[in-house]
Amino acid sequence: MKVIILKDAAAVAAYGANIFKKQLQKKPDSVLGLATGSTPVALYKELIKLSEAKEFSFAGVTTFNLDEYLGLDGEHPQSYRYFMNEQLFNHVDIDKSKTQVPPGNAQDPVAACNDYEADIDAAGGIDIQLLGIGRNGHIGFNEPSSSLASRTRVKTLTLDTINDNSRFFADGEYQPHLSITMGIGTILESKKVVLLATGASKADAIAATVEGPLTAACPASALQLHQDAVIIIDEEAASRLADQAFYKHIEVENQKLEERLGL
Ligand SMILES: N[C@@H]1[C@@H](O)[C@H](O)[C@@H](COP(=O)(O)O)O[C@@H]1O
View 1 (cartoon, rainbow, N blue to C red):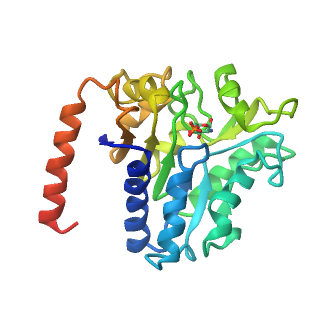
View 2: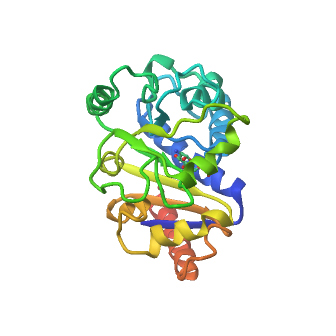
């Protein structure tokens, strides 16, 4: 696990975007795993700028989103499909038929979950998966107690998550309590994982993810098992980590090594 501690949210977005830029320059037909929530928005803005500057193209890219509310169709302004269109897909040269978000309006959600897994496999697996993190350590909608081997399935949201996400819904508006989410096992099969977190409200979750035990009580701690997981955080989100100085020291050494190897 690589832990990158940066000054602020803007630096986190720029660092994350650079990883995606390198990926898309190296492999224009990459399969990207994408995330919603407020944290990735700044990174998507960076990617839009970079693609406008012709640093890379989205034309050959396939995408799979992590999760979706069960009960909302893609036209609903709070659906994650709508979010992705608004925040990224409508602004880049992506082929929308190659963008997948779990179907929140599926007649048979269980079959839809199995189909989603099959579609990821058929695309050759995910090259790079973007993640945010919930205050309780959830990734996607894999809430605490989720099996660390779980696959795409229907999950009930915790009351904390429902509360945290209620800010996006108008007063009295229907807010789903169920979701379809990639499983933790699904996420762990991505070739690379990039998790972004900013702000003091994420500090406990980040400490549990990086330095806590491997436990279903903090789903993101499963990333300790991944061979290529990068945790990009600002100073506030890093504030509860015991070994901050060590992670910063590693990054300085890594930069030197990458320069020497011309990476
Ligand atoms: N399902 C999403 C997660 O994928 C996201 O990481 C989390 C944190 O969101 P934010 O970045 O707004 O804090 O919110 C939701 O619950």
